[in-house]
Each structure stands twice: as structure tokens, then as C-alpha cells.
Image (cartoon, rainbow, N blue to C red; front, side, top):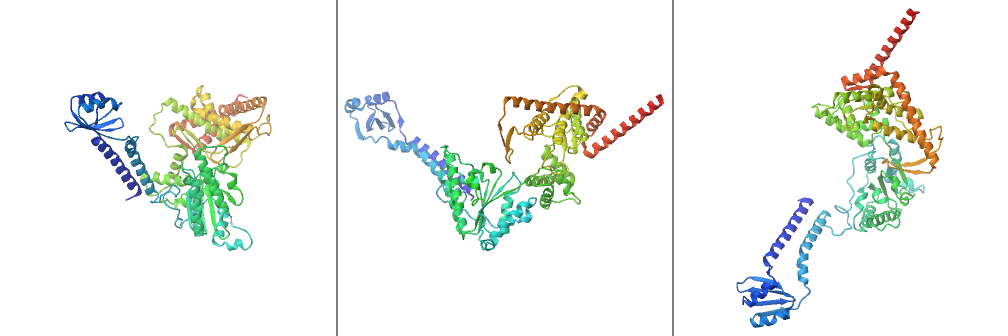
Length: 607
């Protein structure tokens, strides 16, 4: 029987016990009668004997029916009792302790059932300080190795030394050096931090203790610290070994003085215990702590000092080569069609983490199964990529022809602006099929991973975002709410260009908003400038956006025919890829050349 089934059985028995106890009380408790009714029964001679306990009176009437009543003043009824020759027994009032115990019995039963259930969940070991499930035991040797971890070659090189120090500790100690005590793996979610820690344990062939940071924290103060000490005591017995603490920011956050909340006291005691244990290794104990977090900015400085976490390894998002290798690793688990170009898929998914790539491969396999295919082909990867990046197609949404036409010109405006401007990302797909909350999309994918951006790139990005709204105005003469998100993004880029990147001629190379961004995207900004400077910044942002708006309007007006032709292609086909857009553009240029030649010929004839 599993622990869950055992716990449910215990709770069921406790519930039945409480119900049975209530039934017993109902059957054995005498009927309560009013004081006036009690006096009436005495006067009529229906009561022969009573028992007094304080002000509580119990007894039986001549019909053998038990009753109870409360008498506010016993001496006043004594003459009546003596007159009717009622047999009286009495006892001293014990402050009704037994009544209190009777009332508390259901509560005690429920509490006892809960404690028994808790013990069954903890493997039958009493006490709150024990670890969840059972005492700490090393995990079985993992079958993972560095060959199973792709896309983070730099981190692998850094951590190879850790493996060597576990396998050949004398190699480092003979020169007087000491093995790093701790390694902090930091990086965005899904980049493979936990996988890399398991690979280290697999490469070194040593015991591997794995626990989450939240597993240390409980409601009761001192439990987390007790678990830390238990874990390290167990690990020292099995030296050399690895302790892996996932999401260490749950217990390793910065300590704040003056906070008297119990949860904060518990977390700080747990952190203090961890700091002490990391300093308490003997020279003959080789225990390496590996921790993972995506919020290194939250960790306490005492945890990051040398001697504790000596190494801080940043696991970044994979580049295009890393994405291709990760695709190849995960693609081994599925049935693939021959000739799939993983390099092309890797280039089309910039910014994907290892976990997202694994999800992409799985979604592609599900897509192929949905279409009853025998293997996964390139089209399945494309469909899975669009589903993850853009959302699921809403094919059942009914859109009237007017809105559909507006969407086609809106997306064509984005695409043409990106196509005709220099230093922009190539357009790979345009669609007017609703996905997620959007009625259409224009997808741009950079040829290479970008780490820095020029001013021209950012300005042209603003123009591309404005292209949809401007196309609507040129063709239909009105504006719609479809450009709302484009305007928000364009304003954000313009603000950072002026205030953060120092790319404004009027403002100069000065950062007026200091922002610190963590791996989760959280930013904190501080304002440190006068009202006059704030007005100048606002005006500069406004001028930049208005200039981009005006120049984009001129661009699309000049290429009005191209706008109409691309929009008509979208209305017919619903989706146009980059190659098809090039064909439409080529036809437009050819038509423009023919019209130009005709004008030249007419001009010569007129001359």
C-alpha cells in the first residue's frame, strides 16, 4: 500500500472515529429539560432520585427516562425536595474538566490522525527536523555525461577541472592548492544547469545528493537548519561526493535586519547553517557543493565570497552552433525523415534555451503523429516553431472581409518597411491567419545571433513597427487598435535609445536612467535628473518617433503599388514566406522598370 493510500485510510478512520464519538455522546447524554419543567415534575411526584454536581442536576423520572437540568440556586429547592422525599446524592464540582475533555476529544483525534499521516509521509520517523520522504541518501550513479550536455562548451571546460579534482584529488593537493568548495551555476531558466550538475556527477562517478532550496524551508523555525546539518553530516560520511542544491535563492537570499517574521527567521537560520557547514570541511573531506539559480542578484554576499562558492559559472543561452547540437541530441529520441537541415532550424530559433529546444523537438513529433506520419519532417519542425513562438492557429475564428483586408495591409506595411530599409532582419514569413491574440504576424529572423545593436538598426526597427499603422492610414485613411502593441514597443526602443544607450545628439552620451536587468527580465530604474532635462528627454523621444513616422510614410507612399500587390497576395494565400515576397518584389520592380521605359519612350516621341 502506498503512502498516499495509507494516509487516506488513516484520515478515513479518524473521521469515522469522530462521527462515532458524536453518535455515542448523542445516545448517552440525558435529555436537557427547562428549570420550570424540572420543578413541575418534582411537585407532581414524578422524580424519586437526583444527583447534584454544582448547579447541574441529573436523574430519572418514574418512567425511567434520563434527564438533566441546571438549577441556579440549589438551597431554594431543598425544602421542596425534602417534602417530596426525593433521594439526593451529590459530589463536589470539579470545574467541569471532564466536560472540557469531552469537547476536545474530536480535536485530539483529528490532530492525532494528522501526526500519524505526517509520520507515514516521513518514512515513519518522528520529528519535524527530518528530511522530506526519508533521510538523505545519495542518488544512484547517473548515466549522464558531458556528451549529453550540448550547447554550453565553455561551461563544460570550466567544470572539467571539478571532475578532475574529484577523480584525482592528489593532482591538485601536491602543489599546495585546494579543491574549490562550491560552484554556482547561474543563467536563464532552461539553459541546462541541473542537467550539467548531473553530468558532473556521472563523469566523476561519485555519490550525488540532490535537493531543492525550498525543501529546507518549513513553517517551524529551526527545521531548515536541522536539515542542512543532516545533509552535510551524511555527505561527509560518503566523501568524495557532490551536493547539488537547485534554486538556491529560496534559502540564499540577502538577509535583511529588523524583519521579525517567522518565515524570514527560518530562512535566515537555514542560510546561516549552510554558511557554517560550507566552512567546516576538513582537509580529508572532498565534498563539492554545486548550486543553481536564475537570480544571482538575490543571493547573499556571504554566500558568494571565495572559500564558499569559489566558482561562478554563467550558463548563457546557446548560440546557433549550440542550438544545432542541442537539436541533434534531442532528435536522437524521435523518428526523423532523412535530409533534415538542423542548421537551418537552429538559425530560425534565436534566443531559444535548451529546454525550449527540447520542447520544440517534442512538439514536432506530436505534430507528425497528429497528421499520421511515419517520421518527423522539416514541415513539422516549422509548424511546431510557429506554435511555440507565435501561438496556435485560430482557424475557426470568423473575420469579416473588411477586417481581413485591413490586417493584410497592416502586415504588408511591416514587411515592406523591413524589406526596403538597410540593416534590418530579413522577413521570413507574413501571415494573416490569427494566432494567439494577434490577427496577423510578420516574422523576422536575424541571419546571425546579435549581441550589440547599431543606432541605424534600432531606428529602422522603430520604422518597421510603425509600418503597419502607416499602411492603414495610406490605404484606408483611418487608424485601428491593431497597432497598439507596435506603438508600445516602438516607444520603449526610442526611450532606451535616448536615455540608456546615449544615441541622441541633443542629449549626448549620458545615461539618464540606470537599469539593472536580471535573468528573469526584472528591471530597476532610478531617476537622477532635473525637470528641465526630463522635458528635453520627452521632446527628444517625441521627435525621434515623429521623424521615423514621417520617413516611413514617405517610403510606403513611394512604394504604394508594392504595398497593394503584397497585400493582395496575402488575401489570396493567407501566408507568404520570404522567398515568395522576393518574387512579388521582383515583379513590382519589373513593372516599375517597364513603366519607366514607357515614360522615357513617350517623352522622346513628344520631343
